[in-house]
Length: 401
Image 1: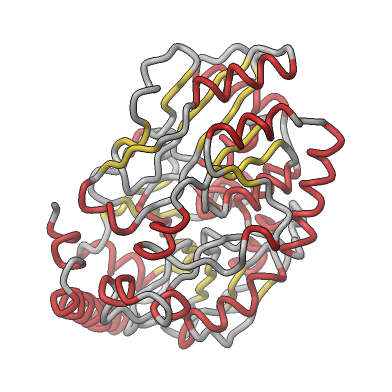
Image 2: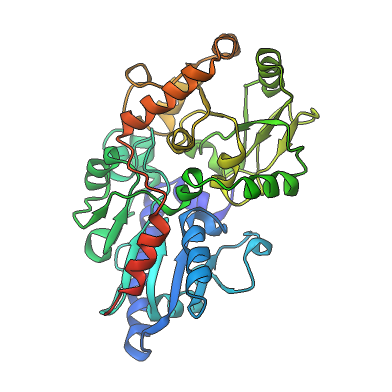
């Protein structure tokens, strides 16, 4: 158990830890704001877990392409792979002196994780929140704490600053709007034009698909199943968790059903080092957990298997076979998170064991898959436009003017 997990395991320690952290943000961001000016040519990016990916990456690359004169600062955390970060981006270590200095002096912040209460944003700065799960299942923040005591204890003392300092909150679904209002009390502006990371799922580049497959060593003609389970809070301290799904059987069933050759990619959640148990030695399984950009993996996939991850709603935007494998709903909702809706009241195809999963695969039909994705998009009132990177860039360029 690492120090962070140790603190979270005790509600009093969690409260103390979050309070100290909030105090550091309050003091340090104000200190640098008092002694240094805003740099109009600098943009600050903070992604969940410090990995080079998600919406902050999409915006950074768009800005570099169209406005190369801008200085881009990317926050990384201990253990993050900096190899993926391009040379034109400056890496800044998370919650160091440099981190607070760059944050206090950047023209704009583009973040996919929430900032602690007390964070100071000065006049002339713009804060754009892209979030990382606007088509989700799991309740979060206050919505989760109100219903689940274990979650409430793990997050005791945690408060966010978005209601006070966020200028724009982005979303790709109308469904998400009331949730962000209730979960963190956000009352500010919301742009319902999509999230930057999903632009690539609408504007799919076949050249990019070919390049990603080549990088991963996948034959261009192979069909891809992507298995991407969500994070489990109660097992985070262990650093790893095993799942019961037989991915080898899934790929065999898809091959038999479609006649194509399939390979299964599995991507662990960044909070875990390993998630798949006995099947990971098979030749049709490829671990892509170190690949930083989930949107790019969704872009090359033909089928997605997850459990309670919001990537299912994102994948529906692109279109493909979506299967939810939920064999632990009772334990998940009692120990991790309660859900925003009942599965039977949604259009998702759900299996609780391998027998049900095989039956759903045997019923695979291209037209049904297309219809199901449309139903999922309608369920979330999806509003992805494929133009979110440009929209965010325009907001950044107008910041402070």
